[in-house]
Length: 358
Image 1 (cartoon, rainbow, N blue to C red):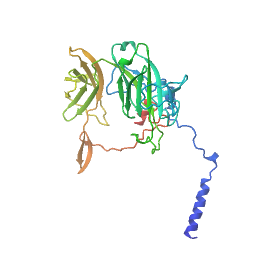
Image 2 (tube, rainbow, N blue to C red):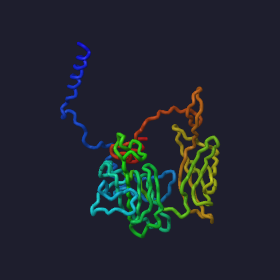
Image 3 (cartoon, rainbow, N blue to C red):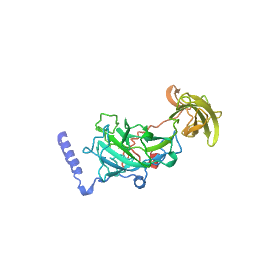
Image 4 (spheres, rainbow, N blue to C red):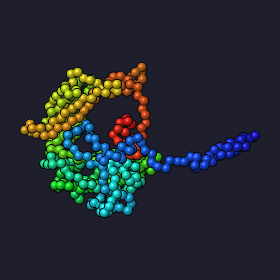
């Protein structure tokens, strides 16, 4: 048998293997659930845990859950609008913070491009007299926010958090919040595999937690923590009103092991007499308490944070440059984790699911 005939016979035999009756090999038609899908769908306020663990305050209000929604090419343009769109009498309901493309959102629509969200909220009575900050952990891609019909601001970028001070736009009783989100998903904006050339479900609109926070006029805006294991200390830089003083305490469990007073905007150090290093085998974390003081010395704001005391550097091991953790080479097995979920797309269905992934 010559070589040509051999290949023809092989192809014919292979072809017969492809002729499988449809009843014998049905493709899955429905969305793929995870073992957390049912729990996520039953949660009235999804992802209700505090969303910013490295700068925590005691008071906050989660705005996740059911929002009114409309989207698609036939609704008002959502790209940097100057006024809110008119919602129908009975708008669809979407579950924030799951994107419209996901099963967990409750609508599972693709390529909406123009997305409009609306809900009401009432501030707790205890927040009276404070500044109210509205936080978005992520909206893909361009977001414009309205409070009580007035424009609070806009933001571009689908993967970073942003916030607005909405104090001047609020009124007593119930307030209205409208978010316009525009995402062309055309591959022209930073989108990773979430674009035309990707093999993954598109992800648009609100896909991370939305929340409110009361703060005093002078408050801690941001915090930078730099561990210094070799120096047995930690470096802190607190961003707040210029000239305000900050008292910082480092705790090991409930015991205060370091304390110092610094000035906002200027870095200062807290020495650690008996430092405990962080490592994968011993992942110990120090807690941090920060109190901001007014010029009279009265405490105006307090936040909680944490850090792990560790050192990362490059060094030679047997003549080869290696990454060193606390001066020691630790073998790393780097795995590619796509971070996509069959039910939530880019948003993990629950916090338990995300911990399992990690």
